[in-house]
Length: 239
View 1 (cartoon, rainbow, N blue to C red):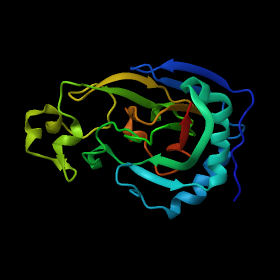
View 2 (view 1 turned 90 degrees about the vertical axis):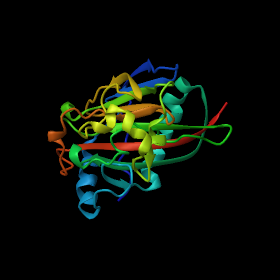
View 3 (view 1 turned 30 degrees about the vertical axis):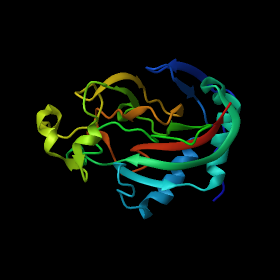
């Protein structure tokens, strides 16, 4: 199946600032027809078991290059200036994703926000994007966080994915599992990019973030009802 991604020339754009000064670019009415991607997910997802990636709480399928290229082209023409990057997108890929895991089944890694990439090659920057393909905004947008510098980093308290001896002093490890949606001992909530159907957000891949899921009872394995997104990643040359 060929690419079904066609961008809407009448999109609307908003630029916010995250803590630390990095841009959060929000584009509304971004696709001409988001339903085509929903139908693609309905075709693909029954063949994909949940838990395909160790840290993602749901179902994912990587798409062919002809899906990533239109996203990279849109970024290059309309978004990259807000990150002060060059026009050279060296690599791009995209995947359809859908959060499906109930809170009580989350691993310790999945209970905390994360970065998409922790380091890059000199002269490069990784930008991530999320396109919300669902209609029910209660399924949640994306929350952004800043790390508390005075606290031991969360990942250093895990050993082989489970709490190590040093974790005992932190209340977080005594709490029931939930999706990360607010401030805690390790991270301060910066802001939330609210979900909206056919909205696409762009941010630097080294910014801590998490799906802002405050109504997990709404999660579904049906792409027509669930928290379906198109996630993109772009390796871009700096100026």
